[in-house]
Image 1 (cartoon, rainbow, N blue to C red):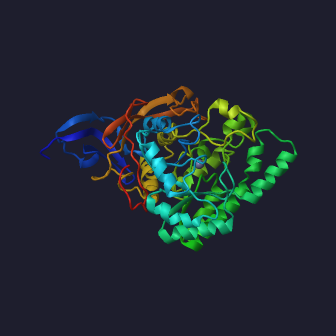
Image 2: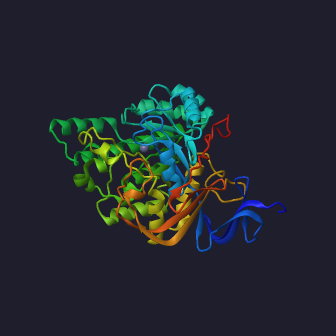
Image 3: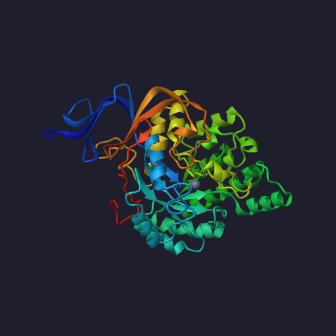
Length: 455
Ligand SMILES: [Zn+2]
């Protein structure tokens, strides 16, 4: 290389899903130009001595409420959380302002210009009876279709017939779906019974959103994905039994992914009894013992759970306190803490750094058509890098949350390992837990996006 490269990330240990090795990474024009022992002349040198260098996090289940509910989150605040925590790519969708048409997508893309600190794909919402819209939206570059099997957050649920029609339409263009799986009839019956009994305690959440309601829906989703030869992800798998159904359908040939989220590895079912709306999310936490958590980690390591997402859906503590347990928003803030919790699991020997690179970067990038531009450290890939100090220790704290939520269910938890710098296409977008003031994020079209290119 005669011309100096733009950036050299020197002396680090490079970690990918396939392994780790000491190497320098040279970056030119925002892309990785070289990985290896050479030390090309560079305009900027980032010293990574003693640090691990991982591919930037790819978080494919994120709600930033922008446009939609800016009092809960927006792109500047939500992507600040992403950048500071080591996430360089998100796929976003907002239930209160769904993308249902190509016009919706174009308007959202236009609106979001200059509002993102990290790169982003955008998902569409599937609507019962509107399977005809799938092909045009896929060609326009949506990352996936979000499907509900139960009416939730104001988005109508798909019964099996409507789900079948949607999956047939996606199969025809090889589009991918993310399916929130809870059975409508079972959640509705439980809600009616609990409301009739006058219940308003936190315990209504796991009874309303029961294990069986999730399992019934997941089983139907798996069956129909296989029958239609579609591609889909079961969203936020809450417990091992649901994962086992996904594994069984995959064994029969279904192209079915299973998404894990930290709340099903770190939070316990009983917490909602005293925390109330601060643990209102659905499906709810199911773990009752550390053995339950161990089983979730095993399923992730075995690839039954294919990847990790935050399902970032923030509300402030005040918003969570408004009304009663029935009317409070569902969801947790998660972008600030997901990478930190995974790194801590690595520090405790539960997960390897390679498995983090696989589950929170490479696999989701592959599932949603972003690889190898994203989720890879090979030459030619975008230079999205996370520098991790494995020896740093800290406590997760509400004060450090960049999301407008300003709190985390993991506050007070001691964690090992820390992201010390995040690079997006070669530019530092966060250092020492603080995002820079640069809004470099661009739109990433999904796999069907013929119109391609950055917005
Ligand atoms: Zn979600």
